[in-house]
Length: 321
Image (cartoon, rainbow, N blue to C red):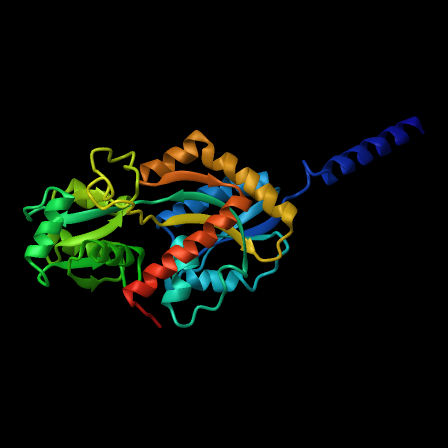
């Protein structure tokens, strides 16, 4: 009898352990990424999912939903259950720029999402073809003014951050150049290196292979501070254009109505992950800058960025279907 009781106690103990939070099978959740596999946002997203999921007690599955520069994913997430199982990694263009750029964006950036936290930003490099007699930002402006209407600049596409940054740069300096949009950074920078276009703004990660080839030169950075992996390249602001600061960023959001306890927990864990040395170093290696803002501060940041980028989109006159 005692033996049977001992067996029953052991079985009950195992059952209790299996049902405890530490031993229960993790619930599944999704991290929606609005960009193709292999792009920098996707790379960071997959690293994040592998750490944030366990911290939240979930198996966080990455699902790519590319299209309309990140807006396809946000439109889908806006309609998903706000039960804490859904999060999305989004770049600033989709949140702050696309609603004013595309005619058929199907979400409200300020009403349809709960901001969780900022992860990193990615300053742009002002790039010129190395064959040009341009070594600095001031020489670039002088060259563009001396060759008004004859200088072409490339971008990864109409309405891209690269396009909008150059539009703002031209407005602030009074120079005139012709925009040549491409479908993606690779072709844009390939033609810059070949001399088909003369100038471009693009991310450090995309530009690095072309800089290494020697046919493209970086003359300025779009952020207020220099980039850690390219400390010798001055900023546009310190080169003479005060307060110029055009930097895309990436953050984590959830559908509106997601329980506050989930948002707060995810925000707390996100800050820890972004500040961890190996995670932050991976971002730095890609030319990004690790940044952390808790949910409450990130919400205010997003609202400010929407006002900032919407004004730039309107000034550019760009409109896309």
